[in-house]
Picture 1 (cartoon, each protein chain N blue to C red):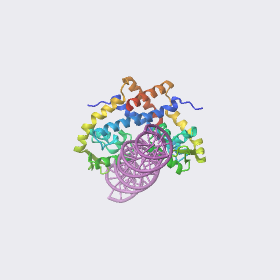
Picture 2 (picture 1 turned 30 degrees about the vertical axis):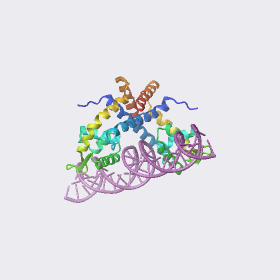
Picture 3 (picture 1 turned 45 degrees about the vertical axis):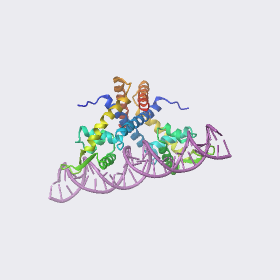
Picture 4 (picture 1 turned 90 degrees about the horizontal axis):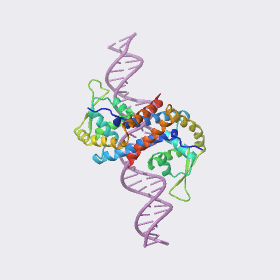
Length: 145
Length: 145
DNA sequence: GCAATTTATTTGATATATCAAATAAACACA
DNA sequence: TGTGTTTATTTGATATATCAAATAAATTGC
């Protein structure tokens, strides 16, 4: 007879939580910009802070595979949110530039994403957030060593 | 100047953790059964405890969309791990039956999945696991209300 | 008993995940 | 300087995510 111990359920809970958060994010993002995805929005905001990232750095920042980043950026370019041009200093790389459409999108998206985060973490004290963070990092470490 | 407060980083950490855990799981599962995915393995174990689930129940248990479950089960059937037959009492539903190949797989998978969980949660005390669970549930609730 | 509605599943379309293999440019260095 | 190696990105193939729409069977109300 298997009992549902925390050991069995915590990892389910992580899945459940991230999916719930992504769903909330997707909903709120689509209300301001219907044709952009959660991942695309996040990438826009990251590039807004610093466009000098290589695709590999970008991938690592959002925990995505390099192949995924290639495809996500391609779609974003297709929709006119950014442009890719070959880096003169290293022709393997691309320089990413946020297009006007991307900049307008960012001004709408930034407050939404910020609100999503505060909504999700509502009611958690600062020390709870820190503890949650530490516990998650510990699990990540266990999984990657 | 934006600072990386826990508010900004905790949700990233959740994403990072679940991906690390899935990667570990995929690796260990593929060592005993190369042609099965993490999701398929989990579904096999759930069906092993109780085959009387409808697809909707199954989907809710693993936090997946009904469309995803349809496709995952179809692939599992194609590979011979289970069979679907129309339920006589409700012809919209299917009865899921684990095939012999599925049963053999389960006996190999069960210890691996169990080990994956203990590996991931290694070093977390019982009370830390519980607190982690509670905090995650709180966030989930914030996102779904 | 039948029309209208609800429920369970499937299908279509598009986005992302993941691994392996392919490209192509940069680099190391004999 | 040419050659082997490493690095950054892309492509291919397959699996899953997600929403909307389609099916088809069950149920409800009259």
